[in-house]
Image (cartoon, rainbow, N blue to C red; front, side, top):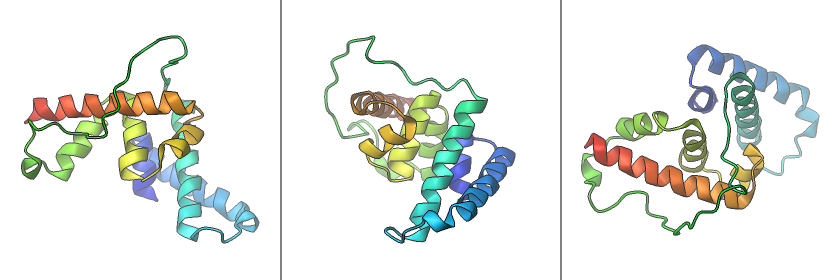
Length: 152
């Protein structure tokens, strides 16, 4: 749970605080746990939500309002182009590249690729529209691809 919190808040001490507060929240809401999902998944959702709330409250995190801007997004689920040798990439390089992106891109990529949330869940967690989530994820993938190409 610490790693989940750390990837979102980007600070060791804050991640420890967030994790502790998340456990306290889970403890106080233990009666709400209906055993519909695994306990770990339930706890992880609490930690993720609290981490995002903490991050939004303590940083200038702003999702782009795509209702004000029109863009044509081409659906491309491949994160990497053929120019990158996948065998030469290391996990640390990818994670470092993600952490160097804009906050909203970093947040969406972390939730999607590392935490395993789908786009509907991400849009609920970040309180953004589904199309906004799709567009942000698409732009984040493209930004990550470009960053990885630069680093190689």
